[in-house]
Length: 351
Image (cartoon, rainbow, N blue to C red; front, side, top):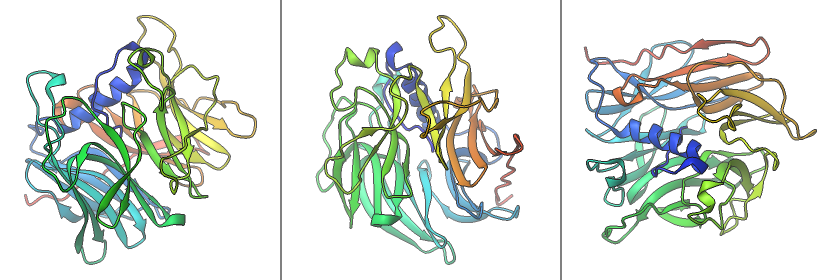
């Protein structure tokens, strides 16, 4: 879901900076509103059963929403901890991350992640029984499950296991294979975390990374463009191959896989100076290597695209006031009719 980056980059990686601020917004002080708030973290399966995370009075709750019924609470985080990346591994089991997140200084570049505590946990959706899969220091962000290899992959920043972390002073971003309780590094070729990490039907790993990954420099960060890459997740280290159009000069900020290609969000006026960015979703065909017609989903920037079944697209919309909480909304879009609705999550509280 969503976009978990932790550095501020300059103009060449402006889109990455936007994603970083999204993440930081999810960590800051809990909303002052006395109602539960959707955090933007979710998953949806082919039955359109939703795993959603909401925040209320300093703690977060993972809930199951199905058949338009009231949300069923599955797991409540520790106070001042966060639940990231809930994903289905099958119809009866989900996995998620619980993390203490960042420590904040007076400025954005004074955040530290190496001293955070993070766990990967699985939950039985029938009994709510929770099992810890792996523990680490640092912040774990995004999980993806690859059914063909029964493999769990996670992204993280400044991650250590088995030793007391030391001050790093920078963001060390990596991808890990979760092997029993150990996190094995499979990729560390970019200064930013990959986003929209997904498994393909044939068992590949697909994600967004800047195109200077693997050979980035301080100078290259000014010119890099976010694109979609794929790799065989059983290889170590990963050998990334470009999937999206190599001639595209606009960044891709989120994508979902469809039958013959991708649907992704991009910026249509990226080359215009001093312009308010014009975001929209557009399909891209693998067969003819061309973009199709804009979907015309206007408004705030869209993220966390998921395509659970044919012609159905889910996404998260984030308002400009995301630092104040109650700022994410979940939407369902019918690609055939072109119509969409906002999902009313109605999380439960004790009040």
